[in-house]
Length: 206
Image (cartoon, rainbow, N blue to C red; front, side, top):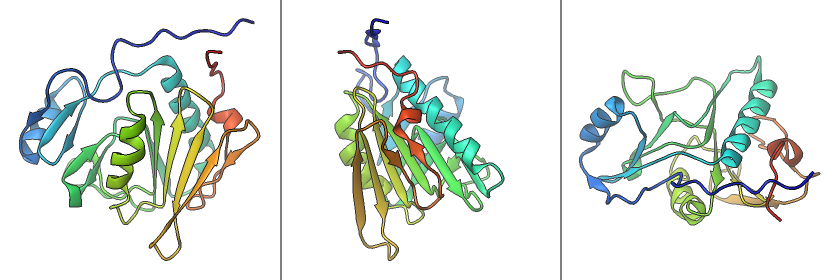
């Protein structure tokens, strides 16, 4: 079967072309809860988000399905990309592609749409978000004391980076995987994510 060449979306999964808008966190949340589209917030700056590619959505679906199946019966919850996460120290509100929280989920206010204690965060990288997710977002996520694992999954090639916090919380270890037989093993939740499952139905352009 010939490989499918996926059309490039006319939009990206993070910032769109319009200039960022500045406002307070309260103003951002009021706007965001009434909006039909998503935006992230970085210390006063609103950054609009848009849709994602077929490959991106396939990978997210594969991850969520695998995590749900393995975490059934455990005190953990899995959220796809509509759950906001607050990094309070940096005044940032972001939408990870996949979030896992083990134990009681904690929220920023009376609404249950701003998680403050994620255990694992997974981002699916695209060409437009690669540097942003690898550098800026990890710099934000590592401020969260609850976070144990940060996983980045490339959507343009078979490559996964798993970053895990040490037991003493002071250092991080990095593991890179790129073979179909490789397995991501987030220690905090005791799950296994084989790359053959992560990339199920995904075809890369030759």
